[in-house]
Length: 225
Image (cartoon, rainbow, N blue to C red):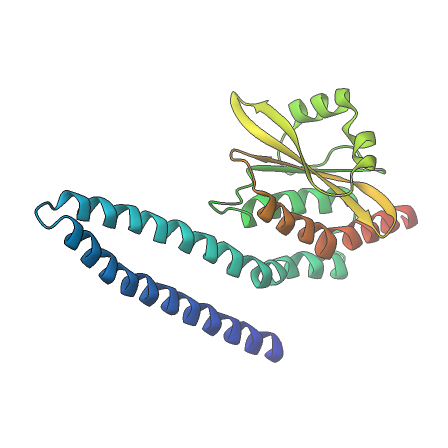
């Protein structure tokens, strides 16, 4: 526990340093930018105001991007720890409990401007579609489409198209779950926004480093039971 807290402290210090560096750099660059615009248009304030507003928007967008990229790797591991602990202690006893817990975890954790998951569910070779919320519409649609079988052909996350749910339009992403060469199932994700290829890789790392082995363990526990 002490080592974990020390690492957390070091990581938080690094993020503060990064934030301070980014903020001071953005402010420092705004000064010569303002001087340049003033030199080019000395008799009007509009170009200066417009330029600074656009610059501020860019700074916020880039800052948000840096925040997500720097936040996810460490905090994903620490946020997932309670689930691993509950599996180890026997609080989570079967695949159904795990699926409900992981679907809620996914939408709670991946709540960023660039990576916003609003609904999540899991279907494995040994189970029906599992989620912590009512997903009967999704279940029926994906069942008719044969998504479980189709996911066997996938090696990485894909955008499967758009999906209507509760009168809202979502982008449907299918994340296949593999442990080595064994296919275990897939995770379905609904997002209001398209997820860029860069951030899709965060989801693939999530599957590879957190989901696959835990699902295999729960499947083995179900067999023993």
